[in-house]
Every structure is written in C-alpha cells, then in structure tokens.
Image (cartoon, rainbow, N blue to C red; front, side):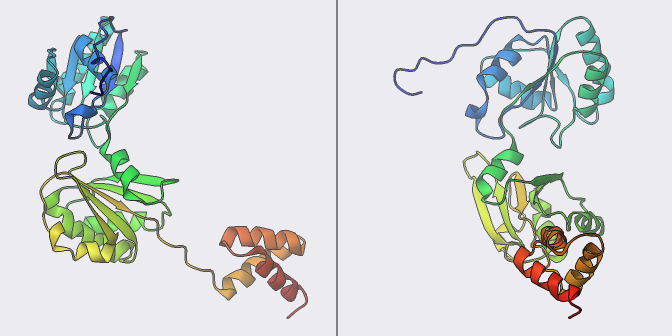
Length: 290
C-alpha cells in the first residue's frame, strides 16, 4: 500500500437483488477488485465452481458466505436453488475457480435463465486470462477470436483448426500443459508454421513466462513439452494471399461492366487490398483491349 493512502474498507451497504457474475483472481490474489469483495461479503448465496477453491478465496479476505457448488456436474441441481433465491429477492454471486465466469467456465445457462425470468444480472469485471494474455502478447488486438480449448484428439483438433485458419484475426486458445506440444504441432501444420504466436504460462503468478516466435519454432521448443501450469496460446493473424493477375483481371472485367474505370478500380483495389493506382492502370489497359 502506498504511503499516505488508507487501506480499503468494504462497503457494507446491502446489495440489490439479482445475480452478480464476479471475476476473481487468476493467480495473484491482489488482482481482486474492491467491488468484487463488497459483493462477496454481502451476497446471500455464492455459487462456486469448486467450493474448496472459493472457500480459500473468501478466507484469504476474512469473508464468510453460504457456498453452493456450481460446476458442469452440479449445475442442473443447483440452478433451480439459485433461481428460487432470486425469486425471493436475494443477491446471488457466481464465481469460477479463477478469472471471469462463463469464459470456458460454467454459468451460461444460469445467466440466460435469470435474464429470461426478469431478474437483474450484474457483471462485476476483473481478472481474465484471455485479456491478460492478449494485452501482453504484442499481437494485433483490433480483432481477435477466443476459441477456448481445442479438442483433445489430434484429428478433431485439426478439423477444428481448419475452420479457424481463414479468419484474419488474432486467435486465442486455452490449453492444458500435457497437450500443449501436440496442439502447437497441429497449429503449425494447419494454421501455418510461419504465423507469429505467444504461449503464456502461469499468468500473474510467480513463474509467469512468455514464449514468443513462429508456431513452428514454438512447436519444436523442448520447454513447451508438457510444462506445468495454466496455458494461454495466442496466434497472430495470417497474411492475406496476394491476388494473381488473373484474379485482378476477372474482378476488373466484372466491375467494368457496371462501373466507370475509376469506380471499378476503386472497388477492386479495396476488395483485393491492392494499390488503387495500379488497379486503375490495369483497368484502362483492359478497356483499351490490351
């Protein structure tokens, strides 16, 4: 705590009724927000992916709460209890083991049902492995796609990656350490070994590490053969294939049938990512029959 700044105190005001989707730290316990602590301190019921993990988090901050298990196995049993609590005007908090709930964690059906029944749903933002990795990777962030966990078997994983290959955005994956090397090898084979990538290990924790390089190099890196810890993989967007002269002529022929040369050139240049002046010169040549 910086000198002269008083330690934070919890807001003991009662919570409005509703479902609170609360982000929790992904490693470093200091990454919880004051608002999240307020909610967890005042909630009538806290739904936790693992009550043991949730209990340790609450204990670290001297909090106690009624905990109910809410994971993929217990959700069907717990969801009616949570909805009944909301119907009674109570405040219900949902947490995962780490990070923002619903991001590769259970909770989607609960949020959907709560909203459908007219109960308020409050996002309590905070830590996210997805955004933490993206912010430090040094890859384009103007467009990105979170693809979650790849399938565990290679054949299904390659089919999954083939669907993502044409997407011109940074791709973000979660993966377990035991499958990391195999996933990187399949990514190099399907997405292209030259694509820049970053493997983030143990984000916000003591042994936080970033491995950067082309996918082919990362796939061959012995340090990434079953490392311990939580893994985020980020793959930069692939490069657009340059249009061939035949592609340009075909596009221009179609455009010239509808537009004046300058307009046709502008349309084709934008569509193919080519210099407008060069496309215009080719449009004039085609019009002249050259």
